[in-house]
Length: 153
Image (tube, rainbow, N blue to C red; front, side, top):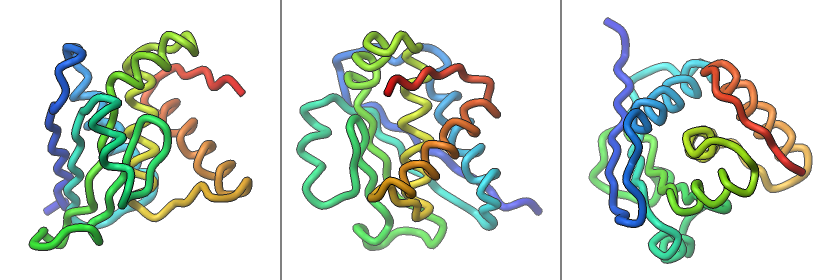
């Protein structure tokens, strides 16, 4: 029997209506990252849609980047062994970035999701070399999913 990948999505923000199909895109992103990274075993990934204010309150004890906070399972107790951790995504941030970068809201949210799952799997982006690796993986996964994303430097 194939190991199961479970993606649990909560919406704790009220600023934006979650577009139809966004939850499916997020699930596809999680599955694509785990597949391309040859992750074996059951996996649970918890995604929470939030806003900028709520996200800033979570940045103290976690790994984060603009628009996303990642909390690995090391921050929690009483979790199943397959629980990889939590990813908090500001939909407010995704919307503002989509407008600024001329990308779709779905592509911006997908990028934040892919970044978050890569961080849960242990990827770092502390130095220039690590940033190149993680950005390359993000781009390849978004292409695999057929999502267009323009990265402005």
